[in-house]
Structure formats: structure tokens, C-alpha cells
Image (cartoon, rainbow, N blue to C red; front, side):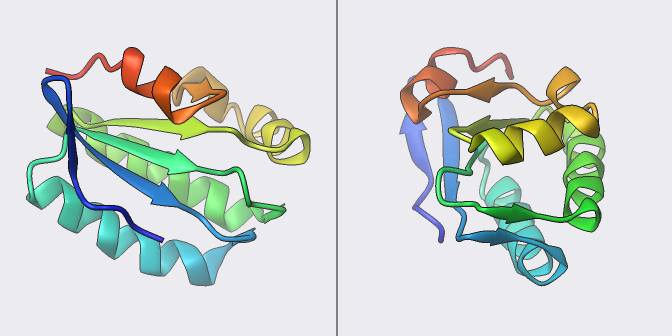
Length: 115
């Protein structure tokens, strides 16, 4: 689920490859890992949604809270490769307005804006 902190360009990045479900149970586990990544000095977190088939409203609210918590710490969150269903759910929750979505991990790494 978690790759080591990669130092891509000048922005340390952590990539989380998510499983088939993004729900309350998986977000609780992921939140701890995400906070550890930030403590290790990562400034960009990529959530790889390519294998995610299900999302629930609780997990999407949690994602929004992560954004709110990490933004003041100058940590950018990006989402890569969501399925059409997941992308639609992200649109419904207006998350696409604050969290950028990219087709690939390489695309996300090319648009890092955090210091």
C-alpha cells in the first residue's frame, strides 16, 4: 500500500497505492501512514486510485479533511488515475476543485507546487 519516500526533483513525495475500496476502514489506516509521511518530510502525497472500485461518502469527507489539515503545512495531495465512477464521486463532493487529479504518477510529479 505504501512506497518509500521518493525524492523526485526537489519535492519529497510519498505514493500510496490504494486497494479496491476507499472506505472508513481503509482511510483510518491510511491516515496514520499519511501523517508519518509528512513527519518524515514529504511535501507531496500521491494517492493512486487506479485499483479503487468503491468509495463511500465518509472516506471522501476524510479526504477533504486531510486536504484542510495538510494545506497549512505546505503538503500537496494529488490523485492519480481514478476510475470514471470514482472521478464522478470526487466531482460530486467538489474535491476536484481543491485536489488535483492526474492521469499518471509522472504527470502528478510534474505539477508539484509545494515549497
